Length: 166
Image (cartoon, rainbow, N blue to C red; front, side, top):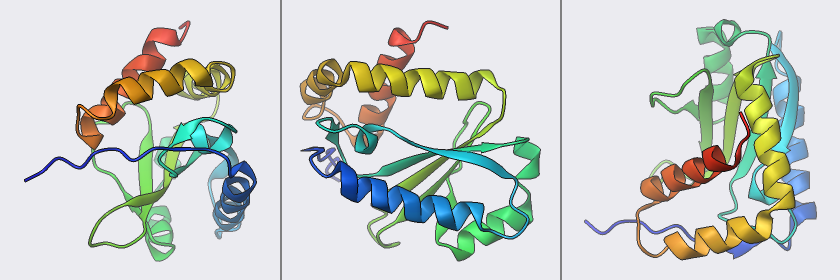
């Protein structure tokens, strides 16, 4: 089986991505009895000129991860968001796909607790991305042809860990 390679485009459509984020934000904050405090548009689709795969990354802040109950998961499933089951540390991740055959992600929710180190790291990471997107673009281009999407995502995370001052 061939490895799926990451597809990158330059973000010249920030206004379009922002509109898509606002639709997701509205959907999330209007869920009945939602535990959501705030959402942020993060990642490369939030930065003009950044190379992106086009996935809208949304940082979702909740009072407690325990507040994300089975009921909330069902509500998200009804909106076509599905929980990603990986060993995430202090966060939950949900994704929306263009279809369930190819599993190409269109939106990714990164759910973290309010007043947590994880939230601080995400905010700091977005500041780094905004100020250093040229360097991050170069890094992405240097690795994208050599590896699978999963390896690519792991290497991007490692890049941010190296640049975070925590």
